[in-house]
Length: 316
Image 1 (tube, one colour):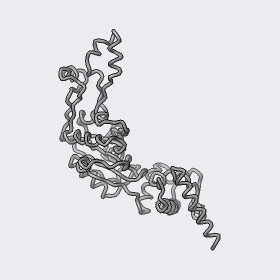
Image 2 (spheres, rainbow, N blue to C red):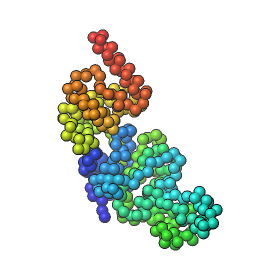
Image 3 (cartoon, rainbow, N blue to C red):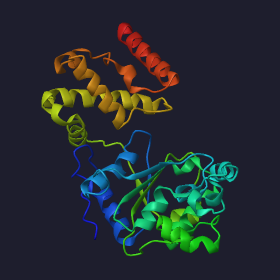
Image 4 (cartoon, rainbow, N blue to C red):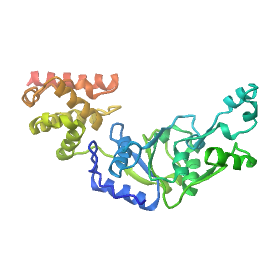
C-alpha cells in the first residue's frame, strides 16, 4: 500500500500551510523521519495525528503509534522490552520454571519495534526526543537507517522457538518498501546531534500570523459547535489574543500564549457567553486573560503591563 498525499487541510481538527504539507510528503517519499520543532502549544504532536487522520492510518483512524520520551530512555526502549524481573520471579516458581529457562517469553515489542516488524502503513510519533540522553538520537538513527534491529538479550538458539511462539526472532527486519511515517518532536531543551539532524527532514511550526488561518483552526476545533461562533466574535477574539501574545513576546514570557491557549480561551468565552460586543467594549481589559498563561511569572508580568497601561491612561 502506498501512502496518499497529505494536504494539511483534510483533518477536522488541524490546519497547516502548503509549505509544511510539502515537507511531510517529501519525508514520506524519501523514507526519512520528520523532526518537528516549535514553541509549546504550536501543534507538534497534533501534526502526527493529522497525518494519520488524513491518510486514514492507525487503529482507530487518526491514532499514531505514540511514545513520549523520558530522560532515562535508551533507543531500545522504543523497540522492545525485556522483563528480567518477571523472569527472575518465575525461575523461583516450580510451576513456571520450565518457561523461565528461556528469554523470549519475556520479550515484548514496543511501539517503534512493532511498527517496524508489522510492515503496515502507519504513523509513529516519538514525542519530546530532546528529553533523552545525547546518545539516544544517534542510536535511534541507526535503527531508522537500517530499518531493523537485534534483540540483544535473546540468545541465538532461541530464534526459532521465539518465531514459532511470538512471530519474531532475535533479528527484526522491516520492509524497506513500506516504512512507517516517523514524526519526532522536540522542544529544543538541548541541541540534537548533527548526524541525527542530517538524516531528518525539518519542520518548524510557527504561530499563524493571519486571521484566516486562525479562524479555520478555531472552527475546526469546535466541531459541531462551530456554528455558535460568529465571524465577528472570532475576529475580535483573535485580535485581542494577538495583542496579549505580542505583549507577552515583548516582555520575554516563559510560555507565550500559542494556538492551544487561543482555543481554550475561545472555549471559555463561549462557555461564559461573552459576546463580540463585550469583547470590543473591554478595550483595556481582556476577559479571562489568565487562561492564556501557564506560569505565575507570566501572569505577574502581564498584570504589571496592564497596571502600567491603566496608569498611562489616567495620566493622559
